[in-house]
Length: 621
Image (tube, rainbow, N blue to C red; front, side):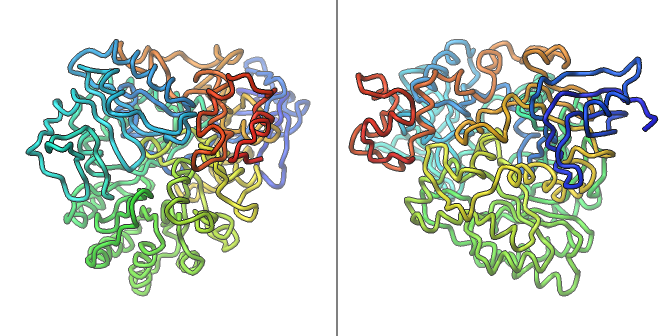
């Protein structure tokens, strides 16, 4: 090895995910690629006068995480406007945050809490009431989105969007009304989430320069969690190419700190084929570079195949025209060699989609297209095997960590044990990758997903899966790294700490392989490298990464609160109990008021003995 490294990380515990060289102490980087992974002594032989060396102090180093399903482009345009309840453990604390933000938000701006949380993560196990929201914000519009199921608007927000007694319910949605017929502020997906997103779209938008700043802050936030690559799944109200101008400008200016492979999501019900017919003439899959490139079509291919997973309502049947709508789109994509992804929650939808895929495959073979389903919470063994036979894959997300209580209540604990059947997918030989589906239905924090994959628990503490459907920590990490490269047609380029691959690395705050199960979700990165260049640093490593300009505008919630709320920053130790409680329903001893009960004079020395000391009926250990 006669080459000289640009950078060497040493004195670490390196998980390479390279089976030929699984563990290392040091990583050497040159020209954005990994030059060597091995012992510190051997790595230091690659050092020259200009080599930067970084002692990581025995910390765990992993390949940079890859989110195979996130809405980072759309999320970046809005991130600076959003108050994030991701990670908040108490409704009391969440409402304190809301009140502080209301106090500094100027008219006509809104305070928005746009997904990424579930009521089950709160110690109180509930959402705020409309009365509480109106009391906290009598004059400033407030919009709170909870999963795919509902939005809460205060009176000022109702005035801002113009919903009155005369406003009609849109198809698939309900504006809840009082006895006099006036909107209360509660919007319900029945089961279509369009009413929620269409209402949100009526709010003020940031000007382009602020959108650039916002996107940079969002990328830095996911860098803070160890994410270096994202496959963007498009999204509603995300038109191509108009709504991609900001991300493309940042790419041209060399300001991307996350690698993005983007899918194109149809925006026009009943005109989906026209959308894709136009796009296949504008851009080709793989077009771009290692930082920004096209990844094909989806996750919405046709609106008649969209089965939103609102587990608080019955499964929606797709309309009879689904197959007739879907077939010409799939045929067009297959003929033009465009990979695709398709949102599908329920096995019934997957069955009907596979009928179409098999029909097209008879004429235009799909092998080698790297097409896949997203979500697949209730997929059957038969359909797993059908996907395998067609050469497809499945990208799973941690939506059940946020909604498992609702699913269990509707379908039962036995059905929840396979929601989704990840181990069965892997045993069938399918490509399986992991992601978040952030920012609306779930949090962008990859460690919440990794915790869910390993423990099978929801954020509310409910155990969903038997050991047969859990993953060991290395297998879970592989789904977040090496396995996800298949979904962007980049195997061998990244996802491992291996000579010749892109030097995307994360140095962790805590050792993923040794922390207790319930602390996995608290891990962050203290140093994140993209192509060997620091894009995030914390603590002793902070000077290595460049500073960002402050979040714009000056009233941005990001300036006050940041993004994901770590447990230590979200109200202290008592709020950690929300994640330890295993109850889907209130217990007979103290309901769900565990944080308040802890403060009482009871014989409890720590979290785990606390449950046993109280004799809690939902004790889960």
